[in-house]
Image (cartoon, rainbow, N blue to C red; front, side, top):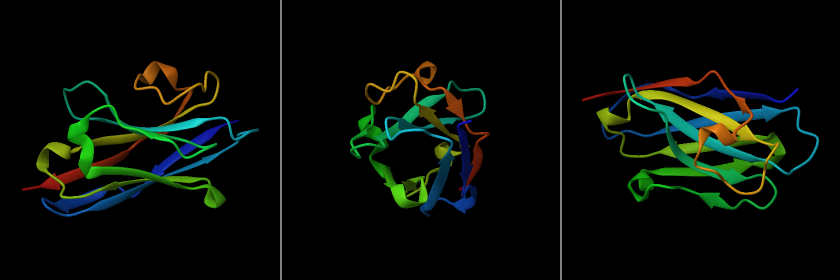
Length: 126
């Protein structure tokens, strides 16, 4: 069974940084993609970035997300999301998800992902 677990959220002041972690397990091959999403209160879920497990290719659909950097440590089966210069508008629950059924390319659509974590709360104070 594929499992996805996020960690690293918390309360941080505006201008600060956080590194979120997404630890995954249960895969039978390296053909999968990990995406980071977030959902603020009253807002739709939005995609931040995605990374390929097999070759490390990354994708970010929104140029405004330049403050967010995705990376991975394959030996630890962990994907990171570095967030710099945090803003109060970044307050949201951050989710990690795995696409391992379709697994053709990094998708910006949440419906493409097969397993989701429970999320980690990020709160940015002004």
